[in-house]
Image 1 (spheres, rainbow, N blue to C red):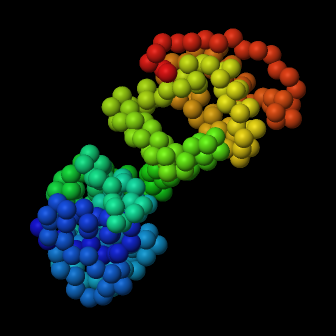
Image 2 (image 1 turned 90 degrees about the horizontal axis):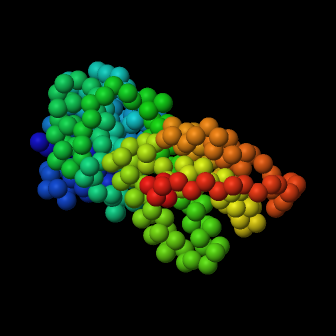
Image 3 (image 1 turned 90 degrees about the vertical axis):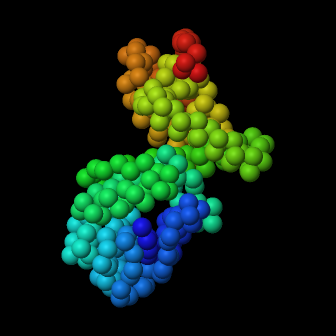
Length: 278
């Protein structure tokens, strides 16, 4: 199968490099290309707002798919004999060093021929094709929340580690390795069972110490901790945290301590749980 990728951005270049490493026959062209584009499968790896515009400039005789998670197959309707969408659930940040695709999910939808060829490409790249008609704003938001939310929180964690004296590169490596283990847990044991740490243990005292330490070190990071805290608590409830301990943690997340301009607060009894939550 001959593949042509249209678009030299992060996704296009990343896919093309991985395809070449996999010894696939792939051609990478600019997103401003016009006229006939050869290939059994033509992949549009261009920004979401210009998918329709770029497709309108091309003449494709094979199957045509785009890589936009926010758009469905209808965005290419009438632009090729068979059309679809192939969205890699992958974070492409550096085209020169694209991530390994083994085990990554490509969410595919569209006409039978386009789906079949996109599935073949995904498998050839080591990815796992999943056929589902779920593309759109909510699906794309979920992908953005998982990927960009994790990257943003990692940046804040790196900031704290740097402030405590760890070198930036070492802090980045440490957080990257930690996130890999989280990803493995989500993949193997699922959610909410992948959750660990003081909230799932119902350890309100540690949550308070976290908030006080962050307020003293970097109030911006403390605000982020507070913002994500309710989501962590909801996950902990789903994992079996008792209502009593959940209420203790919720109070710890909401109250203002001495370092945040509030009054003194009472001590909190510590409730250790088994090691699987540590």
